[in-house]
Image (cartoon, rainbow, N blue to C red):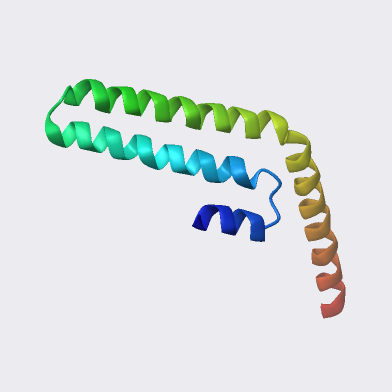
Length: 95
């Protein structure tokens, strides 16, 4: 519920999806930890969890990298252009 409230307060449109994903992630982590503590297929659970988590992180990195390249380009252009202008103004003030 805390994730849902935080997402709604932040104005994120997929607030329910974020809350559901968080809930499922916590449940899967709990099951994996319980199976490891019980000694049931310890290595398989750990490797499976690691592969799944690694796949999710790789998918998110690719999605953000490919989908956000235009935003990153615009941000860097504004940042670099703004930095060079402020540096010129700063040099002129000292003269």
